[in-house]
Length: 174
Length: 301
Image (cartoon, rainbow over all chains, first blue to last red; front, side, top):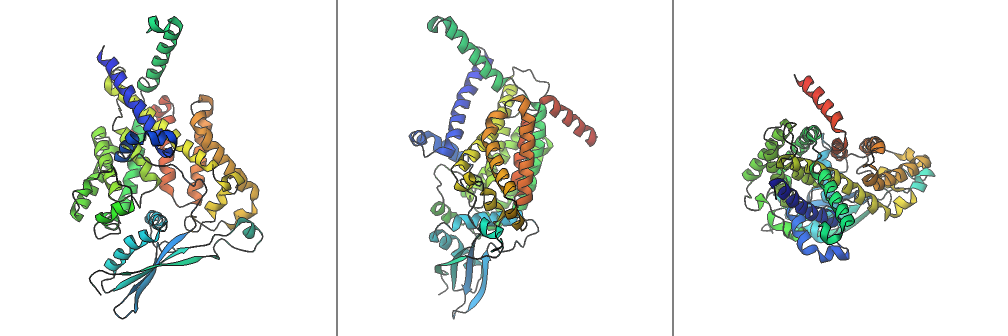
């Protein structure tokens, strides 16, 4: 066998393996996906090729989400309040806000995530804070038919839900 | 082979093998790959320069995701990062500097395969250090940078050389990857009630957190809404098939450009549209890409 033939065969083996993994990885919950996860997962995770490719799918969403915080002082007085991400992007380069929105969407899924990420973060941000109170805010979205009928506008924010998450005690400050 | 399977089957299998080899290994695309490399690396350089402003926030121990928190939040099995071992802020800044330098060298064509490899390793290292603020562009960049590690940009090498074969394979892998992205994106949408109902684009334009402006007027244009929703759906699902038919290729690419410009106009994610549009370069005719490259070189001189 010539070097060229060997190269072709070696590359074919690699291609078949690679394509199998990257085609299967986004649909890994299928029977085939589960049976082959022992070799697909290590490969796609190590090389970071495990994306699901579900852009705006199966439905667009989620609605606008925010994490509201209130840093509390020694006597329970509020030191600072705000939202993550800020309701109106304060950045000249809007891309910075996009990543913050992505973080909010990830954290909002469970209260534990919000507590573990945002509690310690805001304690570091506000050196005088004894604790940080956290809420999750899911902004209501205007229904198409209501907007068409003139009953609502996109930006009216009706139906917004604000749920208590936790009061995180800043370690070593109480 | 022919003796065992019979002459007819042997011939078929031989033809199939040669078609496979011709498709993957003997379709060199140096001009397309040069254009793709310059466009992608330049775009990623800008994209990750912007991320640099928030480097400490995303990757430092003083940021939002200290190292100890990472495995509590995300499945980290088999995921590795240089920044699991070099955790200081200095290491993160140096790593980011080398990453941006590698992207710049890749754009300039200086040791492009090595530059792509360095950029890819650091890119994955940053992603694994904290995956939470990453999104579509970061994920697509993983694939494209990986494939650029195999790319070949020379017009002069023999077609049978290993590097040319790898280069041909890299171009095909990028093409296939774009098809995989659109196929999954389209088929996943079919599961959605809003996409079936033709109202999905309302869910995008009415989301004040991502929409660029107030698009309330769209509610009074139901035909536009439904047509845009269904045409997006149909185009994404059929792209992986129709892009391979030469008479339809330009139409598919032009529709894609219009779609991503449209998304860019409505939603504040310009870099996502940019990376997808850049990927269309690998679907151009090699002769067209060669002419464009020649003109760009004339502009430079």
